[in-house]
Length: 268
Image 1 (cartoon, one colour):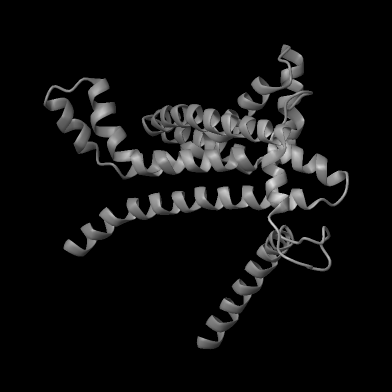
Image 2 (cartoon, one colour; image 1 turned 90 degrees about the vertical axis):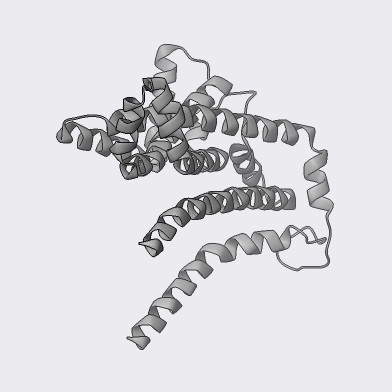
């Protein structure tokens, strides 16, 4: 058993090394004063300063942040009501069908989703740009929020709702004072995940963005095609660090969510 555990740990270390080595390689050379990704000649902040001096890049970064915040907020609201709708469907077959359809959207290839949105926006006459990117990000973020909120709804005892109604609570009171406080950890987790997905998305955004509007992922791709520039390394490093902070925030929300149930088990 010990031998198998060592092999499993070694395998995990190897997998994480393969995944993270290119990222740390990119980050390492973002500080190279030599201007290349071959020989590290000295430490410099020049490329990070260039990123912050690039007005166009700052505008694109603000576009990306606005899209991410708006899409995460709207998709969180829609995702909460979507999870509630699935939860209170009485027929089990219908409930399972809705959950399957929701999960299919999560695992579907981004290229297919992006191409579908492009065709749809072209057909209905929506101009490619801010609106098309925002709508597409909301669409692929809602299923993520649903899958984060739904388990919390399933954990909640129906006796809480019944007790609130027996005490004279209206449907709005039940939603705002009973259900929402209980599922808050799932809501925050869904929001952080939606925000992270929006910031990182390239494939879908590449299809639905138009002239005069871009996001950081599309801009990095465009600049990378023009040749090696360590400003790309610096920009990618900043995006990675921001994403890391968001993921850590999601992790701590999950930990906070797990503590009450863990304490309850120990008391019993």
